[in-house]
Length: 82
Image (cartoon, rainbow, N blue to C red; front, top):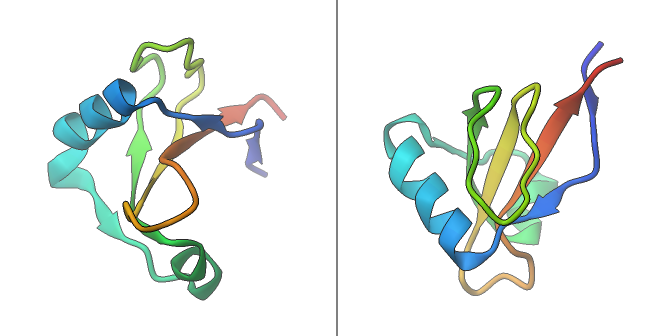
């Protein structure tokens, strides 16, 4: 079973780095509840990759990117040991 820790909101610089590094690996969001929240893309972030701003990414995680029109900010959901 996969377990996720609390999400971490990415600051503008960290979100920009994530978009640049993972552009070829971004997938369009298809889940209706995520689309309703303004999410546009997501990507797997490998273990140990950092974006600065105190983002902990020991086990890897999923990053979700949101439309600039959304009330939500780009964020990462890290995996945690189960």
